[in-house]
Image (cartoon, rainbow, N blue to C red):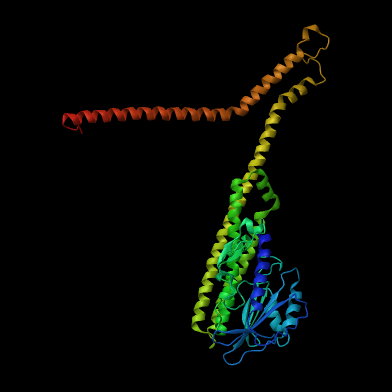
Length: 455
């Protein structure tokens, strides 16, 4: 199964887990979301008290007071919609109080970091198709007491859920065949399915319930950047797992598997996805250092979080090197398949040339004896002295065929004979050296028994 088929399933499972955890979060006020797109845009609103606690709140886009600060997050759907459609989604969700320049700064493609209408805005939006699993978009509008973020699809571990709701804190139990047959036995721990384990093994982070609750806006900004880097790392890990399985299949597979991979253009597609991933990482390398530089001048941004941003930038650079290594692996595998395809073509051409050598004498003979001129031998049909003309022609064809085969196989025969001669010479030389060594060793032993060693 390709990676492109596995990622949407994992996203659906993660979204279901996210909905269950969010439903049990404490509420300060009832939800009054105003969504005119019928559930196409997912929204989350949190308010933090600045002392390690958070609550769900209504979608009113207001800022916090005192130590409190708010976070509003919008998840755009991963579909085939145009960029203008995404802008319409944000206008319907964030306006008012946001203005058009705020919407455009959040939804446009490409990297950006700057101040828009008094707020710090940064975005890392790749220009690929929104439905692709290798298109990443994350944007944020930051003020002293409020943060508004926009992402394309779900970002793992971005939200928050109550402590104790994490699946990782449960005692696991493995599925058994009797469980599938309906024989439910009493066992301690929650049953973990194989597909859930495969999903969890590709995660490079914990769940939302294990996220530390930010106590300031600077903590929240670091958390947003951290989850974005984790999301990229998850995709890279899945690519590495897929490449490992493909290499094993190529080692065990035969003609049909290699031909199918070449026909499907599997590795050129993976290489294209890697280029998109490298573009996203390059955008992050451009934006996040500028975010760190601009946040360092804010009095509400702590120095510890500046150091955390610097570490995340270093992680992003190491991730770029890792993606480059994966791209080299893909190039090497594709080169191996190309060489295999060229070898198959050369083998077919070899068989065709062998057939042409077989039929070459026949074509020559038929061309010579098919000439409408006088004096062609063995062409008299009623002459009794030429009754063996057909036999003579066949013998001539066989003689020419043997001569052609000898010329064709002479290089191979010469190589085999030369190899056999070199092997025989090496064995003979080894035998002589061994006899000489034994003779010298025996002589030394005799001299030692006589009481001295000859030098």
